[in-house]
Length: 481
Image (cartoon, rainbow, N blue to C red; front, side, top):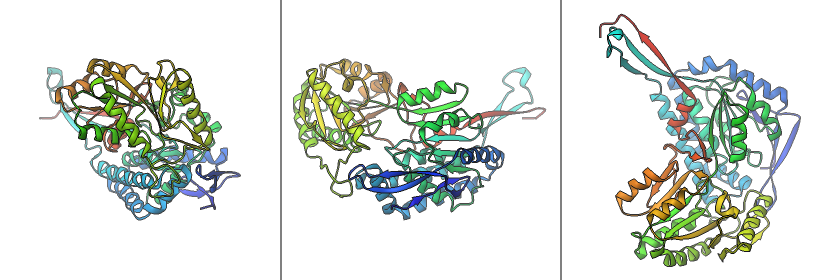
């Protein structure tokens, strides 16, 4: 796992003049060396994608579906190898890395299914007014052009899959830019795509340096940008290219709300287990990890006791160990930032219930209560294994606390009252409401994305396919219908 990795340029392997090393955040060992494309090679990839657009979009559905099916099956065959690679470059515990591969398998399978259904068209009779007699409208979707997919480090395989699979499903060429910290998983997708019969130029995987990205973002031959990452970078991209279609899946500070009716010992055990697991499962490096717990006063004390105990029971350590629940953050700098936010909150009066210490790139699973409103932990996305707990008096206060955030990605609401569930769906300013579970639940076929500063647009295969295409209407005249 320490050889130099070529990138994928218009469907073929290539190397550039420079390279960079990828290190394991747990122990610092070298995982791989990755070749970096030159400016000329990036231009070649963009030109090839632009040139093949008409051909690729006209590719029969069975060809695109077969390619997607092939990638899905090959991911299954190479699950353990790829999971170990994800764990090595990302620091993700191996059990969660295996789960990520399984999710990517589903993404490509869903995309294959959608490719077979896509673009059958919708007929609409127009003789609802006299001027439309004899006319029929047929609406179909067509690709906007090549897609620039920019993926993050926290799900280095599956979030690449969420860029690539919908593009192939609709016949849109794609240039994938994996995260600099975790490029190897994206390059694995290139290996699998190279085994298919997709036309040359229809896809590239380019580990472009971040400082080279502004020119690529502004290239008019790439009219669609699908970005997952921080709100700062995402909105900077959007502002730099206001004429482009940008799907932005950005940050969050997801809340888990535990209401008064979720009060039995079994209920509170379940809520505490799910909260403890999903505040820490990616070392907190998930946009929908549990960052805020908002609990009704009637269950608060019992819930806090259970949450703290279950957080303390999380197994931390070597991500290669099957028993490990919580591994390191992606870098020591990331861990230092999280540590500083915890220290700021404690200095301002927050009560540290457990955790709070850092060792290299690792941060102990941490729980705080009575966090003052003005500190970063109360307002920003911590992206680390840190949880805050707040007491409220009723459902009104709980929902107001959820909405008192510049983010709005997902919220979990622990309640058995179906009326409250529908009220949450109606009132909470988020992209997804999960009833009876943590906000961290995501099925890869459902629409996923947020409101406010959590982004625009939706991922989830069929919904991304809509983002990559536009409706074009055909009106037929002189028909007897």
